[in-house]
Image (cartoon, rainbow, N blue to C red):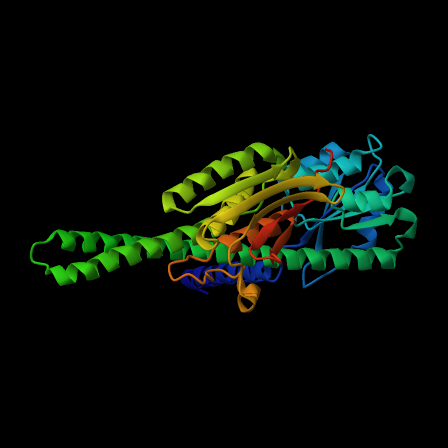
Amino acid sequence: MSAADQKRDVADELLFADEEELIEGLRAPHPWKVLIVDDENEVHQATRLVLSDFEFNGRRLEFLSAYTGAEAKELMDEHEDTALILLDVVMEDPQAGLEVARYVRHEAENRLVRIILRTGQPGQAPEREVITEYDINDYKQKTELTSTKLFTTVTTAIRSYRDLLAVDEARQAMNLLAMSVAHQIRNRTIAIAGFANLLKRSEAIQNGHREYLESIVEESGRLENVVGAVNAYSACGPANFEHVDLLPMVEVALKRFESKCEERGVDIQLKTTVEPVTVKADSIMFAMALDAMLDNVVDFSGGGEVEVVMASDSGGVTVEVLDRGPGIAENHLPHVFDPLFSTKPDGVGMGLCMVRKVALEHGWDVEFANRPRGGLRVGFVMPHPEED
């Protein structure tokens, strides 16, 4: 064999070796990450052994191990794409596991990872309180987790993580698409309005045609309002939770509301029944939603009596806006939260849609109904804040 032939054979081997490595890489999708948090090494070993042949959707498991709460927090910061945490309660202190759960949900703001609490001392963490207060997805005593039950529990948790991840990615993709489309429309709207304004200044334009140019400028402005509202909606979320004193925010919002009414010549008689309350919320998003509720009054009530109520009782915190306008027609009620739905020719139709999105991001209930003696009531019902 000649030297040239030998070189070609070597080159072919290298080429096909690279292709085989690439194909092999494509055949091995990223594994599901499972973080085992427990101060007993035997628990780590047993979990890895039981789940060693686990596979879901063609993906195996990658195990991460933490023996203290502090280690668990560090690993979660490094591996934000962890699918599941198998979490012990009692480690370096009796509440270490619960502190990890609180950190993951509230400080790391990771809502996707599934958290399964495994405890050998159930008295340290009563099941009902833990599930409710710490956003735990499942609660198991170590003695009840047989190999079969552990396998089933992990399968269910990872399936839930997969579905939540798909929903989150779809939401992000839609938000990005909406913002991109809005950006493109805005650029062209500005150009159209700009050229129309230039033509209006031209002496060659006949007076009758100037009215058409005025309409072009006005419609461009309305389209710009739609684009701005869609952008704001797309950028809304996820919520950055913090303890928020609502009273000062409501007072500032009411000043903005009164100014808008004055600018538009809407005569209102404002009545407030508010008390100091604190909730866990994203203050910016809450302000946007409250402005949207009040703007709805300016747009549709036509003036008259408007009441803002904020109260707290054993059921939670309520913030409501009530007016005495015409209310909503029955055939329109199913559509009031739909994007871009409006009964006004020049309406944008994103206000109540924004209210609903803020509620969904926070897990709040939306109150929306016609009042028995005329008018509309719209607002939020929020839970009392949990003590950190």
